[in-house]
Image (cartoon, rainbow, N blue to C red):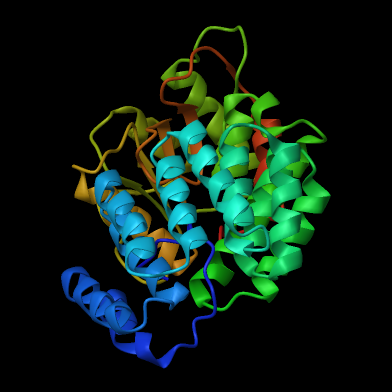
Length: 366
């Protein structure tokens, strides 16, 4: 694993001692030094597949297609496995949106070595990107049969979830977590398992068949206060009234309202909930309601207060408008970019109680 980036390319055994130094440098974020160390190792041992893959991941992380393709071609030029070089080239093309070209390169790799597990894995990923889920599953099943790896189970779970086969997707993600080699892989699998369970709350509808607010809940665990519809976009007062109803119905009790901007409506909400208003969280025992109209990264007040809630697991964050680029609030009035809808506090309450909701188990003064 390089930084927090999960492995996009199927990898071989990580046990080669010669790779200890470049791996350490990569883990430390010393990319240029790591690349030099990989080059030194692979000059001496050009058949070390794992080294080529890990070096390729470093290059991929720099988002340069030309550099990734050059390295993929270098594998074969230096006497490495031809199928690996073509697999990496196909992976690079797929990663940069050139799916059909990538698929053709992967098929050439397959013709070279039909029992090479990584090419089947990458074929599955390319087919998934193209929406060919049945073909993707066949390729991933073949990859796993040749070499059982958590990466393949992880990708299989994503394909199954996209097809609306949530129970089967859960099994795949559970398997990926149980067989993970790195803590980051285990964490990724657990996150995707939670996402899958939230999607399954909406029955057998595929993710692409759900309305925006349902998808947002499934993908983030944040609770939407409204649901999409043909109605006019609710007013700020409508959202405040719905949020107040949600708090009362759920029995949430806060010690103060922490405002991160100067919108006058927050004073009205504080009065309705009988809360003192503050600009920062005063003590470690607080159960704050942190509010913002439409926060962004330029407002450190929001980041600090929301971070406190997340780290202490007490209180709640609420925004009137959830920006796409902002980490999800616990409860959002409307999603930025969506039109229409109506407040639905009863549905919001139901979603907040879901076992994988962001609010499940949160200290809310009940």
